[in-house]
Amino acid sequence: MIPNIFHFVWFLPDSGGKPFSLFHYVAIKSAYEINKPDKIFIYNNRPPDTEWWHKLNGMVEVVKTEPPEEIYGNKLYHLAHKADVTRMKVLKENGGIYMDLDTICKKPFTPLLNYKFVMGKQGRFRNMGLGNSVMLAEKNAEFLSIWSEEYKTFRSKGHDKYWGEHSIQRPEKLSKQYPELIHIEPYDSFQYPIYYSFCLKKLFVKNLDFKNAYCHHLWENGSYELYLKNLTVEEIKTKDTTYNKLARKFL
Image (cartoon, rainbow, N blue to C red; front, side, top):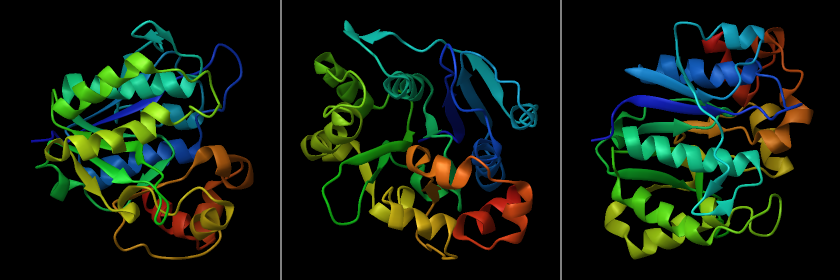
């Protein structure tokens, strides 16, 4: 049984980095309101000093966590890969639901809590792997143990051709070897619309209802400058888009 507790990871680099913003807050608030979790944990190395971070007071438990520097002796160069390793570790140790901070919940994950481990297919038509932006796991899930062992061959140095090898492609490969240890949700449960620019418009320009979605992934790397960086409460309240109509309920 997967416990109804949520895990978020927010690592800040030594200098720079994006501020903890309105859409990050909405990610957590939507999980809180929609899923009524027993607890929400956020794993953080340096608490940011922003309005939206302070609004989380009383909603989350902050766990002081330093980003890991290596795994099985393999150096982790990019903060995203350090977060990948951290999410797997906290899920294995505690069980629960992991979500990226560029997500928004639409309906409860309750029907999925009876599985051992859950990921969602990434991409509708192409074989893109399994998305690790949303994962559900029972404590000590065997699939996580097997997947973690795969990091003995980790070789990415950042945004290179191995970027998603262990985090996205490897779990799909393992799902074919150990189908009894994982439940895979369809492409439109967690990861849709996908990160292509014309798909992002379905979230931030058009006003659509994706009825099968438990949540949406906002693909911050591609949507930040265009849509999320300057997002305001007023815009969410007054402009009818797929994202805004969901988000305004959590302001």
